Amino acid sequence: MRGQFRVNGVARFEALDALRGVCALLVVLFHIPIYHALKGTQPFANLQFCVDMFFALSGFVLCHAYGERLKQGADGVRFAITRFARLWPLHVAVLVLLAGIEIVKLVFVRGGGSFALDSVPFGEGRTPWEALTNILFLQSFNLHPGLTWNGPAWSAALEFYVSLLFAAIVIVFPRRRRPIFLGLCLAAGAMLYALSPTTLFVSSDWGILRAMFSFFAGCLVYDLRAQSNGKLETPHLLEVFSVLLLVLFMLTTPKGSFQYAFPLLAAIVIYVFSFDQGFLSALMRSSPLQKLGLWSYSIYMIHTFLFQLMRMVGSYLSHKLHLDIMIWYEDDKLLRLGSPGVALGLALILSVVLVVPLAALTYYWIERPAMDLGRRLSAWRGSGSAATALSTSRTSAASI
Image (cartoon, rainbow, N blue to C red; front, top):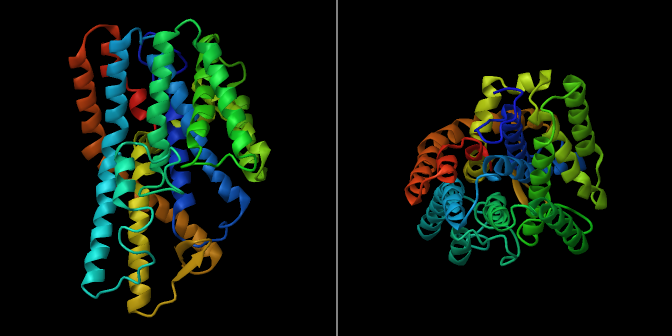
């Protein structure tokens, strides 16, 4: 219901749904293996802030969906089941697809064929040990020197564990959760800054601190939003201002300590657009943007598989047809498709055309059936308001 903030019922934040979808597409653009005009620039590198926006959005949405409904340990078990069903099945499905690529590479190498491979099959980052830690959602606890298998999945793995911490706090300390959220947010940010003062963009090493920093900022925004009167005095102006502030921050922020201000900026944007009252919110309620929000987790998780195929096909064509279309740039193998300016346009188009249709399929074939199964299992585990909320809430189903 637009413009209403329901705590005891199920409400959707349509503008925030669309924001999640836009952020997912920007992450895709950041990773697409095409050399273009923005590669190597700091504003382009700052697209990584979209991951921090995901964490903050998840904190807000989960606090809204479950903050008043988790009462006892059994509720926490049902919550864990639904979160696992939300995040893990698609993650493992993509792992299987990526393992298939490694098997194909192995077959061609042993058969004497060549894809002009830039890495050996099941090499570093794609070993069986790293597959095991990925299956267990443990790949981002400083067990490996870098990202492994499906690189972007590091954030999904950490969100799972941070959401369990959130549930434990709500159940054990229901009246003290706000100061605990604030303390965890500040402590995580301070510890991360001490370990990585030059950049917020950590992942497989100290990503858990990065996740907690923004996730609990999102929880705090929810509590602030819940105390509001449900209306912005100047919604159009505030929406434009918050978007301009976000764009300006991403365009101008260099590496360094100022990056640590982003969770505060994310909090401002989430707070403003949670009211869903301005003309930008109306635009974000359009069907295409709502679909992007619905498919955002699939968009985020599946694109690495597609881009690995792009590299393999490009390498094969370059090798067999003697085409000079592959280059190495900062330890990454990229396609060179015309001038950098033309390539930027192609990157924008292909980010949508290649990824979104497949993401829609994986949503309907994998994500939604898994979520339905998780809701059935959580409902089977018990009854009552918490079980009902866990089995029917749509807000959590959209979070990354």
